[in-house]
Structure formats: structure tokens, C-alpha cells
Image (cartoon, rainbow, N blue to C red; front, side):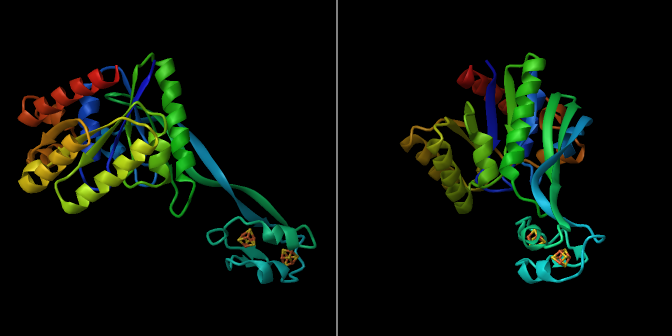
Length: 287
Ligand code: SF4
Ligand code: SF4
């Protein structure tokens, strides 16, 4: 049975994607899924070769037929979003409410599907990858995350893969809920700052709410030994496994500048060996 593991963080900038990419380079026969559809960045490191692109349509937009429009002004009068300016509609301002179609006496307005983003199926040097990009200003990111996961599950079936490794989005909103729903393990990457601790506990509550087992990685733990101790105490008090503590080291940034994961860039470095140990533990937790 396919196991789904998501790497998430209550806040951005904790090093979540570096951890995903590091694990991806150590794993065997996995499927990758980037569910951070609002601001995906896993592709920057993995340079995927896109094999298939699909349009993601999740909302409607008004379309005006100038040949039927008498410019009576009713649509402009009723539009609450200042989008109807007959004989034109401002498709960026249009919220797709459908009021103008309803009030137009000439049948000059039709609601049509709007492209809100794109879904991609790709190949990377670490295996197949499902990913997506929401267009600026578009909503329904949770729905697009669901599509990314669905495609990831299809890829796992067709490639006989047991593991889907998911890069989640920061925060605790819709895309995160769609990411962690019914997964097998959430790995929460945090950092030893007060905001890091606060956001870690919020995303942990979310995972608990959906009965998803969690484990913690403290990234750059040596930047604040006292806050690292707070996180460690929190884990002990809540019976939460601490997967590992990664020290701060400029080599992580150097590997990124080289467009490589750390285990690729420096396979025998202490952090690469630590990542290997953590990945082995993750496999033990889900299998
Ligand atoms: S309500 Fe219909 S006919 Fe009137 S201005 Fe708008 S599109 Fe044109
Ligand atoms: S669909 Fe709604 S928001 Fe869009 S133009 Fe018509 S009335 Fe305005």
C-alpha cells in the first residue's frame, strides 16, 4: 500500500523544501508531489522535465458578446466588483458571481470556465513528480492541491512506488488541510525561534485534528540552544518523536547555489549522513 509523507511547516523559510529535496535524493522508487501550489519552489532545485500539462479550471468569468449588447448599462449597475463596463468585462476584476448574466435582458453575457492554474506531470532525477502552479490572484488552492495528490497517487500506481513524498505549503490554511488529509506521516520542520515554536504548535494541532501522526525536525537548532530545549521539552511532554536536529551550516546554501541537494553536493558531510539516518527512521515509522 502506498504511504504518503508530507513535509510541512507552520511558517515559511524554515528549510522545508531543502529537507524534501534532501530526502528525495536519498530515497528509492518514490513519487514526488509539490503541494505548495501558491508558491512552488521544489522545481527550482529538481529542474523537472515536464511531460504533461493540464489546465486547471475552478471558477467562472463573465464573457460579453458585443454583437448582442445594447449598452443599456444594467450589468454595470449591478456588478459589485466594478468589472462590467459594457461593451467590455474586466476579467481580472470579475469574481464570477453571475449577476450580470442574470440581469442582462439581451442574453449578451455568458459565464465561461476560467483557467486558474496548471497541473504538471514531470520526471526528475529522483523520480516522477506531480506539481502545479496557481495563477496570480486565483483561489481554490485546496482543490488544486487535491489534483496534485490525485495525480501523485496515479503515478505511484503506474510506477509501482510505495512512497509519495509531499512538499506542503507553509501555514495552516486550505492548501495545508488538503495536503495532510489522510496522509501517513507529517514531518514538521521548525526553527528555534519564538515564532517558529508558535507556528509549529499550530500546525501540529491541525495534524492532530486530522489524526495524522507527526514528527519534528529542528532546523538550524544551534542558533538558539534555549529555544531548541523548549521544543525538545514540548516534544517530550506531548509524546512527540523528535526526528532530528540539523545544525546551521553554510554548506546547505552552497549546495543550493550549485542546484544540488546537500547529499548530492557533499554525500559524506555530517548533515548528509544525518539526513540519511532521519530518512531511514521515517521509513521505519510508515512501513
Ligand atoms: S446588461 Fe447586457 S445589454 Fe445591457 S449593457 Fe450589459 S451586456 Fe449590454
Ligand atoms: S460575473 Fe459578477 S463580478 Fe463578474 S462582471 Fe458579472 S456581475 Fe461583475
